[in-house]
Image (tube, rainbow, N blue to C red):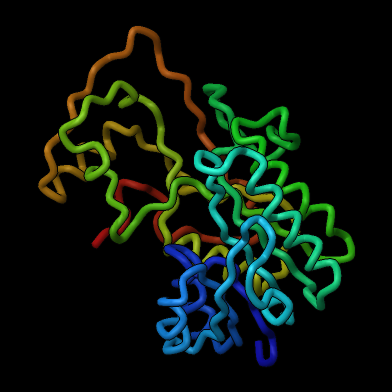
Length: 273
């Protein structure tokens, strides 16, 4: 660990606790934020802080940020506001910069939103091309990074719906009408996301992996428990005219290759605050 430098582009809801976790393990950590207001807070936590915007070209000192061993990219796409091409353009600029940098390991945080709802269990090989995907721009971005191999180790982590702490499912549906109660959830607790990414950094694991809690209770079960736990108004559950399509994302490949044991295998047991 000594001497290894990790750079995190995107010190947000997931990136910041990951940076803190890595600092606790005595890694040197660089981190970027789009807001100058967050620079002092990152510095207080021992993170070498950079202001960086991807507009889609980089605005900020990307060159120094990429003087690192491992680069982790956690930049949520904002397709709705800026169009489907914007995120791949952002990532293409990063890939171009990585090619002339000392980075040896790239981790791109993607999402299980790449999977279409085929009403079955889905694995990584079910989506390998944008044309297979419910989120083609994300797959385009993944492919930009995977082309950096074999010169560099490349890891793509498709995370399920990130939950835990202040992300409380019941608050999103309180008092609303829900017709998808029978659909299974594909959630991931933030603590598990942080530990999985820490393990991938340590193990230098290459490949594309799903990161989703292994158990998949229904939305109705999740919402009922969450609303009861946090005194939210229960949603009204109605039966749809036709069964809702769904997807159940498998984390078997991740578990097998990294031997990761989930802290929160069942979303009904997630820790919130």
